[in-house]
Amino acid sequence: GPDGTVREARVQGDLCMIAKAASSLLMEMVTGSTLETIGELPERQLLEALQAEIQPARRNCALLPLGVLQTGVSAYRQSRRSK
Image 1 (cartoon, rainbow, N blue to C red):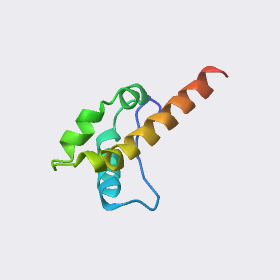
Image 2 (cartoon, helix red, strand yellow):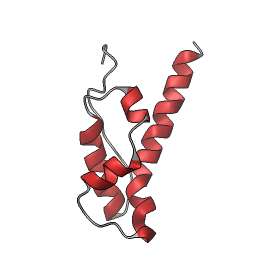
Image 3 (cartoon, one colour):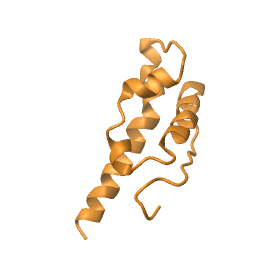
Image 4 (cartoon, rainbow, N blue to C red):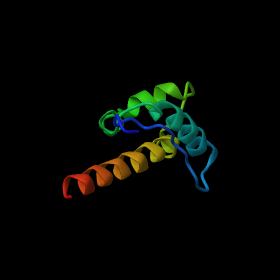
């Protein structure tokens, strides 16, 4: 939005159930947040919000959406700075 907050967030992709659940929850979490807040969102916060025990072997599945989002936010912010 004009005030620097995310008005709407969506996810699209062919994901496993854990990544799909994490993505959906993450989109809710970031709506209304600033890009700076999203860039600093700790992994722990997403894992806790899932309210499920994620096995170590599946932790990357749960954190994939956050990593992709933060990479995209970082690239966007860098492109804005270079203009």
